[in-house]
Amino acid sequence: MADPGGGAVCNGTLHSQNKDCHSENGTVREAQQNGNSNFYKPIVESFEEAPLYAVILTYMGYGIGTLFGYLRDFLRNLGIEKCNAAVEREEQKDFVPLYQNFENFYTRNLYMRVRDNWNRPICSAPGALFDVMERVSDDYNWTFRFTGRIIKDVINMGSYNFLGLAAKYDESMRTVKDVLETYGLGVSSTRQEMGTLDKHKELEDLVSKFLNVEAAMVFGMGFATNSMNIPALVGKGCLILSDELNHASLVLGARLSGATIRIFKHNNMQSLEKLLRDAVIYGQPRTHRAWKKILILVEGIYSMEGSIVHLPQIVALKKKYKAYLYIDEAHSIGSVGPSGRGVVEFFGMDPRDVDVCMGTFTKSFGASGGYIAGRKDLVDYLRVHSHSAAYATSMSPPIAEQIIRSMKFIMGLDGTTQGLQRVQQLAKNTRYFRQRLKEMGFIIYGHEESPVVPLLLYMPAKVAAFARHLLKRKIGIVVVGFPATPLAEARARFCVSAAHTREMLDAVLEALDEMGDLLQLKYSRHRKSARPELYDETNFELED
Image (tube, rainbow, N blue to C red; front, side, top):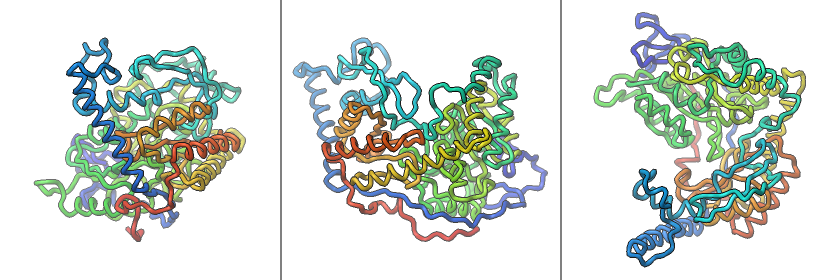
């Protein structure tokens, strides 16, 4: 990959300019190409459109709320309106406001009304069941106070604990305790100085074996794995093609790189191919020189949509136009694929088809941090040029050991098949939960194998009522609305776990069935989306 400093990297190898590598279609590559994979797995996803009345009522709800918000602000300035629910507290007025103009208005008048549904503190391990600290507000959700009561045994449908490995201490975690006693908690140095431990090397070797790649490098923070390493791989004169629904860490990394960024529609191969074709034909703006490198940024599972990347088609386009592919498997590693090795295994692809494999340990592995894996030359390059390697504190040793034991558990290196059984149980739970929701008449988004299950709520008032009623029934969920989603597509996001028993899922489904009737949330009419440019694909030929 290209070195922003002036050298060139061919498929991850740092070369001087007189080495035998050449440029074709705006990218730098080695003459030797990887083998092709001809495997294709049908992609079954659902993105049903909302009924027209639901869309109209959603916009009306926001419109009426906005109208009355401005009216009450006006009356408040005249001294007529006495209710100060939408006014900043006196102790906040000496600070520079976090939001300006409409954002400030939206936060005060709309978000504050439903703020109690977010940032709920828990006081236990985030297993299949967890404990929630009860809190109340005396000033319209501007501040909260704890009542001292603990809501026990809430069914956890919100944490990314896909394999149930984020759990209370038991004997299987003894190795983590031993590492804590031997190494302590912190490293107090960076990887490039005195922060590389034998545990880090052991973990990196295990990750490369797990992913079936040449090498891997681990980092202490998942978000920074993207945001701090993408700038080391691309720079000025490079082109990034980014899916419109990519995570903020990918977006930040792309912006920090200084490369030109162009967005393609979510999982839409026609949109991506048009950008690739134009990039090859026209090159850079004004000069029309060939791009130093074209990098495609995608995710394995998209956490707001529950969709899975169309990897076979993207690999075909990548090979056809000689681009590079960077895939973020934060949500898919450990959660999809016959043995939990992510979307590359899910589609039966060759790991060498992906130039940069990125993932995190925060979901399926019950830990924290992230990794980048691929060719050894690529990883060696990042060891020198990565901002995280140079400036960030190394991963905590007990965290590294937790990841090691979790990965060995999944791979069966602990001498059992329990890890594989959990991967299979997660797939069963996911299919069961999704199928039951569809049968009830809810609109859900995403791939049928995705453990991230968005359930569409649409109207802002129903978002708050949905979360509050479910907590009363001891079910903890995550609700999401504008600006994290489109204005008319507020939703609840469920995360299925292998630790969920059938009884737990049935209890949640029973509550959802009742809530769907109470709040009239069963919008499904089993119609395809009216947005084919986003979600429907025409025939696509897999070719070089």
